[in-house]
Amino acid sequence: MVVLTIYEAKTHLSKLVKQVKAGEEVVIGGFGKPEVMLVPYKAKQGIKLGLWSDKPKKHDSEALVSSDPEVNQLFDDALNDVL
Image (cartoon, rainbow, N blue to C red; front, side):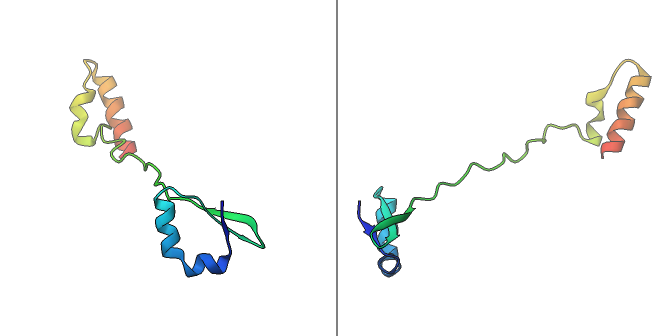
């Protein structure tokens, strides 16, 4: 493992980035002592869009139909409160 100075890293940054992308370790330090390591960036998996896309909408009230009109009214009132 080679420890580069900050000056060397700054001077050869584009070359070092290529090395890191190729899988090599690049360590930067001072006075021969390792301080930081360059690593490739790995994007985090984002939030899945449309997570609530199956949530009933106001126009989907037929999905909440019950044989009891009182239950239907309770669902309609709750849905109107949410929307």
